[in-house]
Length: 387
Image (cartoon, rainbow, N blue to C red; front, side):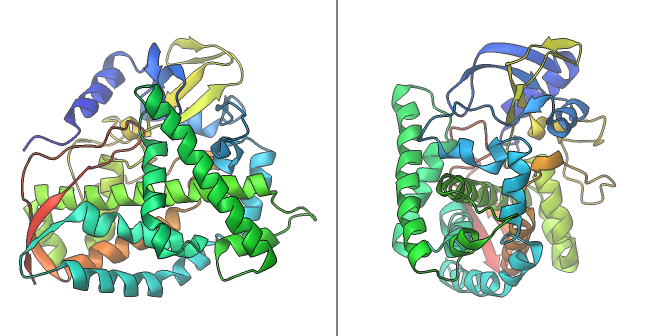
């Protein structure tokens, strides 16, 4: 079976071997800017992620309606540290684990609806989209009636703009999301509820609270990072199982190995493909001189397939000795929501495999969504047998 995404995986491999760091003046980044340095090798990607003094996360234009540039993921210390310390008070690993009983209950309810005697489902629509959407919406206090609207906004923001109309959609989706959350923040300030926005309105550090714009930035990033990437992780996991019946058999006998599969899927089909940085000074990387102000695309998806770090990197191997991937980033911007994502993925796949087996594709004609910033499967129709 041809591996989905083979074209970009081939580009990663050839670039690691022949052009590990190179400039592409015509490459359009996900937020609309053109021209970037591509970085592919594991060592170099980790260097970019680790050295925020050289590679800034403040790469987007500072404009009023761009809420993403106000989030901690788009800022450097000391402002980043302040935001992360404030947000961490409400976003602790314990708080994420406390969500697990509710996640388990919701997953059970969803599986009751979608696992039928037909032995068919469209996995992206039926499971991969609603689970992270429900979790993030619950955390943010977003009602069910608005979920479809939020999914549409988040997709338009991570979609790779290819023309002016799509670039306009990118801005308009952010504006609409910002206006929505501005109203929610106003409501929660006047009448707090049991959600993370209400908590974040109250948290303080040295007498300082998050501003409204900082809260907006967090809400937008949480929706994107906690929604799109987990959807992609779940879909890629099922695709990987469908491609590897032997792994399905192994997990049926050893369900504890599900955690190994999930980490290997993160490495093999990283939900977030690259992260952008901007050089704060001239720097030599991979024999190339990156000038101050140049944009850099650090391809974590390529770093995770670097054969010098991961032998047989293009193969799924649950017995792999080194699972130290960078799918959740590296350094000070390591994903704050990683514990939550792992709970969601673990609960979903464990409960699913308790109820179905012999997962296979209805068709080998599977497409990826139009985005290089994420590894995103458009639709995943599967067949299965009930356990």
